[in-house]
Amino acid sequence: MTTLTFTLIAPPAQRVDMSPLVCQKLEGLSLDAIAAIELQNGNRKLRVDELFYLTGSNTQDIAIAGSTDKLDFIGKELNGGSISVQGDAGAYLGMQMKAGTISVSGDTGLYAACEMKNGLLQIDGNAGDFLGSALPGNKQGMKGGTVLVKGNVGQRCGDHLRRGQILVEGNAGDYCGSRMVAGTIAVMGTVGRYAGYAMRRGTLLLWNQPQLPATFNDCGSHTLAFLPMLFNSFKPLNSRFADAKVAFNRVQRFGGDMAESGRGEVLVKL
Amino acid sequence: MIINGVTIDKTFAEAFPMKATRAIITAQNEKWAMISAQAMTGFATSVIACGCEAGIERVLSPDETPDGRPGVAIMIYAMGGKGLAKQLETRAGQCVLTSPTSALFAGIEGGKPIPLGKNLRFFGDGFQIAKKIGGKRYWRVPVMDGEFLTEATTGMVDAVGGGNFLVLAESQPQALAACEAAIEAMKKIPNVIMPFPGGVVRSGSKVGSKYKALGASTNDAFCPTLKGITKTDLSPEIESVMEIVIDGLSKEDIDKAMRVGIQAVCDLGAANGIKRISAGNYGGKLGPFHFHLQEIMA
Image (cartoon, helix red, strand yellow):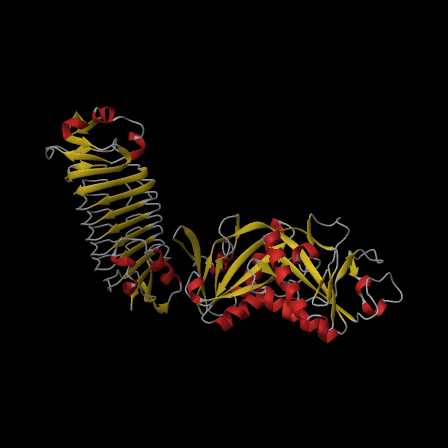
């Protein structure tokens, strides 16, 4: 079976809700049935074949070719299988995904991986604000799985992060790891202002010294035994994180946010 | 059956079902991993009074351990799951958590998960940190030398305890030398431990006693000093008997260990005072696993 490929006929003028096109919802459907699925496009509904050319048949291996940032909710609640996005993705990429893999060759919009539960989401370009965060009003963001961003991420990365790991090869914007409940965010580049703002628990693992809020206290320099194991777990990834040369186990540990429970930590490579 | 002048009795060792787990202790160097492992497996020779049987399975090189440091694999066996879990937890808490630079990991994938560091984390008084790495849950407990890293659970599996054989020799030094040779060979077999001191027990027991309070007492049939006054199993030239007890994850593992152990004893042979190999059984009433010596050595 060949990859089921949705090739965008033309960039849509309005935003498109792509949530019906996930592996588990397409399983067992014929190409005709898939073509007849209606997608919300702005304030109207369009058939899939009005927006995309369809080729291939493997509903567990989906590709979206010529994708643009107008395509929202790609891979929403994905529960196994893989989705490969060739181009940019819109907002809410991989929202609440439960299993499987999503890869994006370009950039993504707001709220990628928000409330994600498990699986692997890889973004080769940049990610927008609120990566892996909670939806507005909700108290828990991403709860498991791995998000890998090869570019930069916007503001509020990992806001309310509950579990799982966000790995950023580039830079992170302001409020990285804000209101984290637990989990791990690793940033190889720089982070903006207010990193770890109001974090309760969890780990911010940084390659470069951040400008931390005054409510983080220096706990000294340490060699931590869990770090080699953490880096070892990155080895299967197609990423600089898998490179043994970037690994370290000697860190400066900052505890905080003391304005919260203060059980979180910012670990900075020494 | 006679091998190198050593008579292999037509008898069998009788073993019984147990629950088992394995844990991996690592440390800054092998010395401290071994110190911790020896503490954790101390006072664990027999379930009769220790609550469990435990031993060091083998030394692990850094590339075999989860954290890339030198390590030691230990195994604990008990008669039931609850007992095993309690022994594991108390021993880990007192002997590994306390040991400088140590870390503790699961040694068995699968089986029923039982707490390893899951409850030890409370020693952290709220400062402990959970980390899920590669699908496994770990705890980082702050301690005075840094952090104690421990996996939350390890696996508990069905196992076999009480495999054994007896070495009957013309003198005590010869019996001990033969047992030492056997233990050296048996240590190379995976999935087994020999829980007695140095792997050897000189006080083999029988079920029951003339004293009501005791469930087990000396195996008088194999005591050389009682040859003339009890129903003895010993011929006149036997002056010393020692036993090797084996616990293993499966009957096949114990089979292998017994084979290499008995072979090592037989390699010394009659020329070194080894006269017979026998085994302890209770007429088939104690356990469902029977290890027939002659079949094992066939």
